[in-house]
Length: 249
Image (cartoon, rainbow, N blue to C red; front, side, top):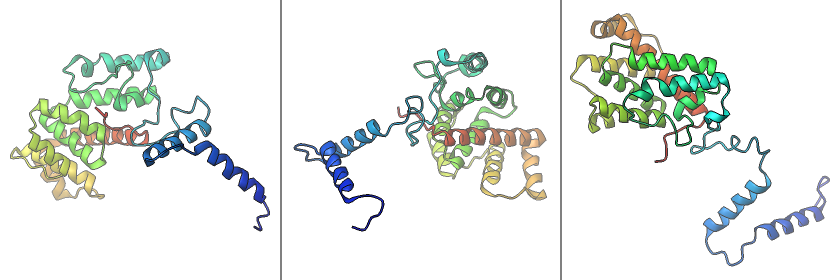
């Protein structure tokens, strides 16, 4: 070998060391071997303990450690209490806002990491969910349309449960997930069309499209829907960046 950087005997030492560390006596199934290799890298290549909970980025492991009450600053604790004592917590619990250890699920746990912005998001979300004039069915149709467009597993998980409570059928939930929803209610149909249009077509509404939407939804209804779409797209993007999907069970 003409390697001017690594001597041949060093490569031999490496090969012998790896063989000694990874050789499995009597192994006859590749899953066992893969597990041992994975454990070897976990043990020997792990970062500092303070980083180990956040440096593994995959679909099943969030990139942010979940914060329990004991770990919160005063500002974070104030936001935590707003989330857990507001209408989400006092109304019907269609999905768990809190985990068993008291940490917050979904986008709420992310909000705690930036409480100044998280507080604003929490307040906007409460307004969108509880202080608009749209019906519960229309609201959940819009949220689930955003979930389908963004591929947000948590939003679909949470709001299919809320949608059932609002009166959406299993067939309607399936068509919302597949992008084929239709409704005989003109408001629901227009709301769904506006949600799809704003997410599927990257150009402004033309005058005819705008007038068609306003004629059914009214100016206030269009404002409410556009804000709702932006809010839930923001949550979906937060969860995508930080690797938060639907719970496994």
